[in-house]
Image 1 (cartoon, rainbow, N blue to C red):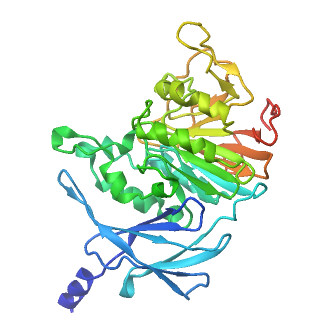
Image 2 (cartoon, rainbow, N blue to C red; image 1 turned 180 degrees about the vertical axis):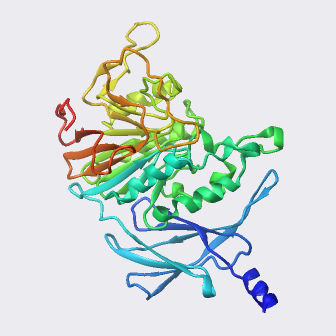
Image 3 (cartoon, one colour; image 1 turned 60 degrees about the horizontal axis):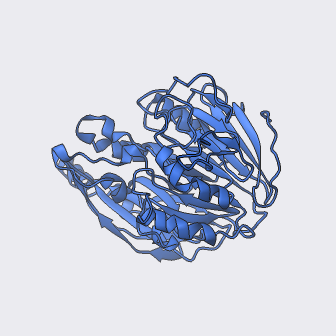
Length: 421
């Protein structure tokens, strides 16, 4: 009997690290990804709007990769297409006795007054604090996560131990298998280690996490855009070339004019390295990208910018610093109602600890800052109002550490409340 059991176990094609993200620009497709550790198995997703009745099938593909002395499991990606808006779907992956079943909900059709709730998490990692952040988020009403970079922190271990990518995928599956996480790359995804022969940046990330970059005419998975409910979300890469004439620059220059604020009134940008950061950690690291792109953010009235990287929380007032031209000396941020609120949420709980060294005094543009781990929620109510709130880990989930009513820059460009509300 022991030999029979061993043989059966050897041929079980187990399914782990299930995660989904939006699969097109509109929200009518979902990319389903997972890993089978020992054998490829099947890359098919069975799905349908009724539980246990999987009416449709989507074929996928499988790949593996090597990183130094690590060989990945079989990584599957399958795009489920032609979904109906605002519909719950049930899906199943795997074969035989090792299938696993999950569900997801598609967003409402884009429209100016379509309500939707996003979670915002950055720099999560996989520590005790990471788990506290994650468990708090699971109790929230978030429908999708805007993730602002730095996932597994595998590069903090010897030889960028890629087993940490596997453990992070299993850790986050309780959410990522059921709702889309919109991915942004951070510095801990670069994984460029030529001294051990690893010369391809972002190698583990690009094999494990797929995004719908082609649907927004991007040439790279590190910058792309999606529509989701009443939000138009632009994802940028702090660690890819963004100077004039580069692919990212050219793409963003063409992308902003495409945004129809009558359809998707809320214009949101995700990046990893923040532009406005009053912490001594990573101080001014985002400055060159700010100089390159900030005038576009003001011109097109971006509502909100979410960033990570700094392991603390900070919310800015609406400011810009676009007047400076090297010789005029006008290099101080000024209040600007055409500019976004900058929200730094790199406080997910990573292994490197908190960034508890803020510059003093607190600059005028900084409305609230605190070195605590946590997550944030953005509740879009309609085309004019959204309620944003941040939750620190040491509080119960119901306790709000910071909050702000945000007014849409296109539809309701008025002064917002200056105090927490």
